[in-house]
Image (cartoon, rainbow, N blue to C red; front, side, top):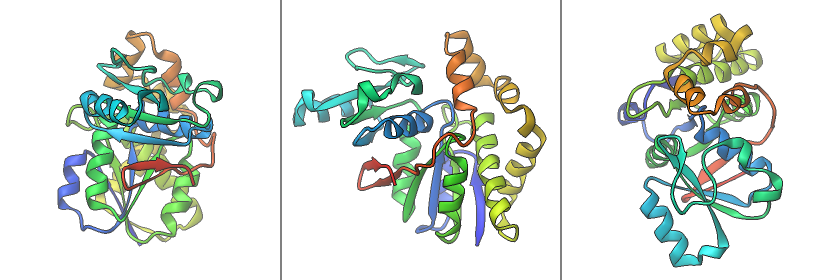
Length: 238
């Protein structure tokens, strides 16, 4: 198999359709989705815009959903939760469906769904589980959600972390240039992952906004074995 890394969702335009795609928005959207499903949420429905999310919830019965997400890292007015993964506790989300929108992550998921035959939600916290799922799915691309169209260090490092777990299981997998670069970057910073991520642009923004605990939480590796999958507009845990 061949595995590569797309440093932004825009790079999806140049890949072959039908391959497996794993989307990373380490700070914080995919980490929050994984946290919600690990806490017992029934599913997560990703939307690109807050207006879309609100309209869907109103149409199908507002009381049946929790609205979660952010714009500029803050909770959207009228929404129940923001994009902090630590807010999606079992007491809050168990058994419910979450209507979810974020600045970068949910957009990346929607783009991936247009191209991939299978779309996985990837984070540092489920990196080995995602790695093993990718190894049985043929050629794959790890997609970094990035920030406002630019690449982001934490997503690139996250991709490298998953690639390292893949190589641990199958040393012979072939890597594209982007994947080789991500794996090399991860190898350099693996022993001090939080310190490295915290120096990135988006991490510094979150820390300044009071979300330093989220940055720590998002940098913890292998805390869950679930691999959420996006199918027909709905994310559920596998």
